[in-house]
Image (cartoon, rainbow, N blue to C red; front, side):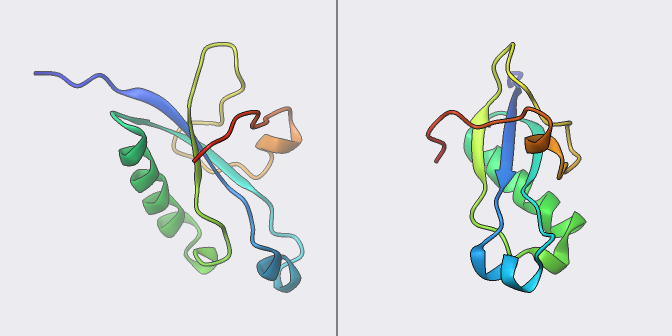
Length: 95
């Protein structure tokens, strides 16, 4: 039995308190392949902990969305701090 993986995007936005301490802290975005939104959230949290452990408490909970054809998508498995500077946007109510 095979599980179909979908592409999910995820974005972390810095907390106001963190921006006072680290004024150059930017939103981070990435994409992952996962079977469900919940799995994508867990995978992206693990990637944040591995790639940016010093800022794990400086971001709000990740915003997750399922990628749709024709929409901007962050790079798979790599956090980008430029995604929202280059046309990436969230025009949905992500939970």
